Length: 300
Ligand code: HEM
Image (cartoon, rainbow, N blue to C red; front, side):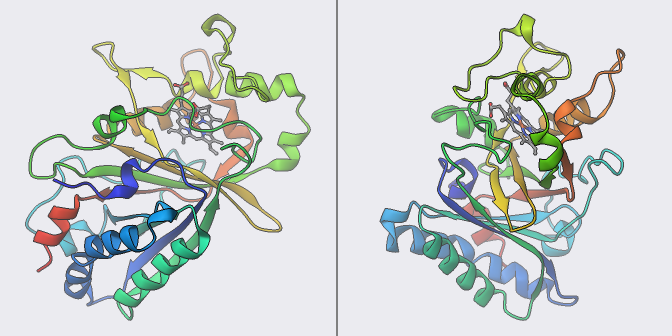
C-alpha cells in the first residue's frame, strides 16, 4: 500500500492548507474526484522534481460515512475537544500541499480546486512557511523529537488491515499571544518548553517543570511504551496575527488525544501545560488520510 507522501514528508519550506466543506448533494462526485488525487500527487512530484512536492488529502470524521458508507477506519472519532480552550471545529476535507517552492505548492492548490470545482466550499486556508531554522513563531525549534527515518512511517501509518498505509490526522490552528509571550524572560520561555532557545538543548529531566510542554507531551502507555506522533506542523502569519498550523499524523488517534488532555487538563497536582497560556487553539478537527491505493479503489 502506498501512503500519501504528505504524511511522512520531510520538512519543507512552504505549505498551503485547505479546509473544505462539501456542497450538499455532491458527495458521490467528491468520492470520484478524491480517487483522482493520488495521480495528481504523482504528476506534480515528477513534474517538479526539484521542489520536493507532496500532497495529502484527509477525510473528516463527520463526513466519512457519506463518502465511503461501506468501510470506516476503526478508530476514527470526533476531535477530542478540551472545552473552549481546544475546541472542535469540524471540516469535511483537509488538503496539505507542501513543497520547497511556493509556486509549486500553489499549482497544487489550483489543480485540487479545479478537480473539486462546484463540489466544495473553502472553510479556511493558510499558508505555512519555514521560519528561520525550523522554528515556531515563539522562537523555539519545532520538530526536534519527531520520529526520524523509518520510524516516521512506523509511527504515522497503519501497518496492516484494510486501511494499511493510512493515518489518523488531527489539525489545530493556533494563534499565538505574542505580546504576552514577548514579555516573558528568556529563562521563563525556556522553562515553558523544557528546552533552551538559541541552541535547542533539552533540559535534564530533573530540571523540567511539571508544566513544561515537552514534559506534558512525553507520555507512556500502560505497558510503558512511548506514545509517539509524527508532527507536520508549520508556522503561519499575517500582518496582524501569527501562530502554528499544528498537524499530528499517527497510526492511532489515542496518542494525540492523551497528549492534548495532558496539555489542557489539570493533573492531581493542578499542573497543566503552560504553553497553552500563550497560544490559543482556534480550530480543531479529526481526519483520516487513506493510502493512495485505497482512495483509487474506492472512487465509486
Ligand atoms: C515538542 C511547539 C502544540 C506535541 C515541541 C517543541 C516545540 C513545540 C518547540 C520542542 C521541540 C520538539 O521536539 O519539537 C509547539 C507549539 C504548539 C504545540 C508552538 C502549539 C502552538 C502541540 C500539541 C501537541 C504537541 C497540540 C500534541 C497534542 C508535542 C510533542 C513534542 C513536542 C509530542 C515532543 C516532546 C518530547 O518528546 O520532548 N512542541 N507544540 N505539541 N510537542 Fe508541541
